[in-house]
Amino acid sequence: MLRWYAVYTAPRAEKKLSERFLAAGIEHYLPLKTVKHHWSDRVKEVSVPVINGYIFVQIGSADFIKVMKIYGAISFVKEGLTPAPIPDMQMDRFRRMVELSDRPVEFSNEQFDRGETVNICKGPLQGLMGELIEVQGKHKVIVRLQNMGCAMTIIPLSFVEKVTDRVLSIDS
Image (cartoon, rainbow, N blue to C red; front, side, top):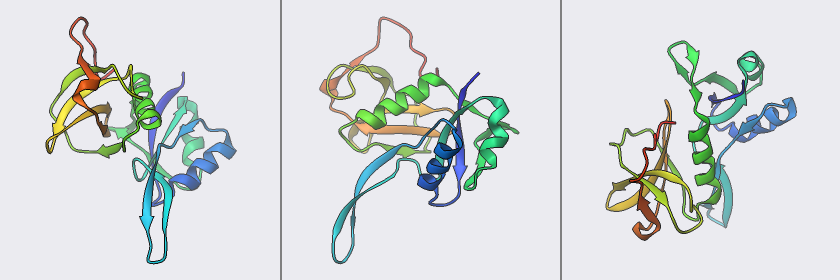
């Protein structure tokens, strides 16, 4: 059975590790965002990881050793001594947020209080479910990743509706 896991990478090695996983046939996901870097003589848009130092792999338990043998993979995010799987629903929401958001997606290890469960009903993230929280006066939708933290992006309040007619487990 294939499950998602987070892998710690060597410093600033996320893109190279992604290339090595591709060459080794390991299913993986490296969330990237575009940022502008300013140098003294130019400004350039570059792709950088949404979460520094991590890459996600979708593997069976028999492939743990194969992943760790790839240069640049340091260790799995663990719960106790065992690699901690990330529920498919959380990864699906996270990927959707990163790939479709028209606003920057940021990642935080901060433990936010539970927010109101909402469905995004307008805009590029339409159909995504998450939690609505307020951070420094801005409303953000967050998607939690088990044992890691949460991804978040700013969203207009007019784009969300409360989920009231059914119970949604944000952790699933």
